[in-house]
Length: 405
Ligand code: NAI
Image (cartoon, rainbow, N blue to C red):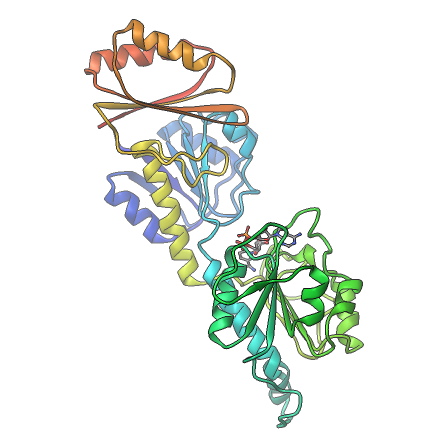
């Protein structure tokens, strides 16, 4: 049986090409679908997996009315548009591609650091207005300057390595202990990082601790010659305080890619206290927006979906236990998704022994409300049908898939 995919919102063709190569049936649309259309399509065509980007919402109503659906591929970074809890309860796995645009963000940050140091955007905007202003004073190389990275995760470490190759002194601050890469070193405190760095770049997630983590006090610790870069999340920097710090020359410049509120559509009338300020680079949340990142997303998510249907692999899942599934050892693999309640494994195993079937491989993992059981067997088709029919009688079962080798 071919796996049926519905891919919406113009997902990169690398994704659908790969799935078609793997013998899947793929239907594509450039548009997002309404809730009603999604439910109708999934049920009428028995869709196994839906691929979406950020505009399609996978709501509780869709999940509860989509019995054939086994997987959702979020061909993007965030998964806020998907009701992850409902998906988990219904045994629908969700995959995304969280690190596909890491390098893109890192490159933007490096380019902004140099542009701020040379006042490129400011001088360019003057020249666009016909004003020639050539001078060396106030322009610097980034070599031998200190870059302070707040949040030394996937993006932060990439930025650090690139900055080192420019001859910069890289320090970082993170709430968890991180291995320093290259010649970078850890800063004992946020204050220490802020007060000694020539550039401060933020790469933290959005959470209670990071909300407003850079405000008037923190900007006050920075050197007056230093610049701030934020390509993480808009809530991390207090924009009003930043605008004041720039106007009062408390810091020398800033590059901001993310804002507390961002327009949902492209177009005019964007507002911010930072508009028009000298040596402030503003970009419309494009840190991760490159052709390469789109390609990476297309191939990463489609590979995760393929491996899920071929092996039961959930390594890149957001709402399932992460299981790296080995090759199938036998004639069949059963993917048994059940309620995370005591006694399910014992119940399943006693049924298997009652039917006289030998288990070649078994692994059980749990996450929140579900248990995820993989089992490989040497058995004929009749036994496989009997086993699945009996397993489906249990009220603990959420979803059962049989993969033949
Ligand atoms: P990550 O999860 O790999 O790294 C985040 C790091 O921040 C972790 O090492 C974590 O321990 C650290 N951290 C958490 N709370 C902290 C705190 N209070 N103080 C210091 N460190 C803290 O995340 P990744 O992939 O590097 O992404 C970083 C940020 O970049 C995220 O906010 C993400 O949303 C944003 N992003 C922005 C894009 C854009 O287009 N501008 C594109 C992609 C990601």
